[in-house]
Image (cartoon, rainbow, N blue to C red; front, top):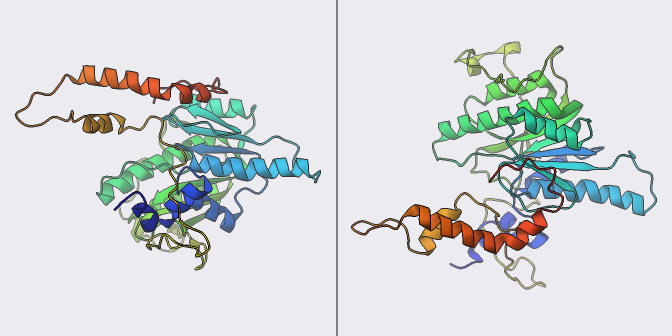
Length: 344
């Protein structure tokens, strides 16, 4: 077992590194776009829960390249507006060309106002969210937390999305998922549940593609009021007839695409020798950084042995970490004046 073992077990992880994507999840958005044409006519897009930035990468490459190629070739442009992209996350993220980063909380009204400010007062055409909690393995708990995260993303979307716009978000399919579908149908006339080929069949993960944003007449977005109050019927999934929301389920991609659950040989192409490719962008400030440092330096607490003061350990670790990241932070500070400044 070596560095290449995961390249064999996860073909999309390997392809992401070879094509320069920050994470394999980039293929999920690409395959959703192939099926739904998400990027058609989009000039303002928001990526919620963006770190490490693979979906922002897709938006940057697809939307900005399309705009630049149209100008360079002298072709006719669909719109004279410049493409604007905003990425939002609590964690720090390495900079991307053409993407404005906001390090903030999607449940705060100030974050929504910051997004609109970057769009010069105009609403977004497209909002995407690939956010997910750290799963516990307890499916009921994971599904509930993911549902709350999706509703938080929907809530801020109602503040920044234009009428007729599109919202794409990750969803965990469980026994109560119909309730989420019905909530989304209140705001969007067309809701589809899609499963990209790059999403493992063994996973309950899927994506809701919500098109044609049309909120109820008189609806006023409000961050302090949760979209799902708990005054619903516990037997909601047993409803029948017009009271039940049936959302179409669509598998994206044909059988010629790679199977995300299959193990592939390292030598995919006989004419091309396999070479290991390191990850495109290492994490900047991962939550597991302190644990890795303690393990690497044999500082984890053991029985019958005194452990060093953690405050001193973390202080020295943060100092060395800042010294190592100094060049990266210098680059990241360029164009970061618009960020909210929240710590990672």
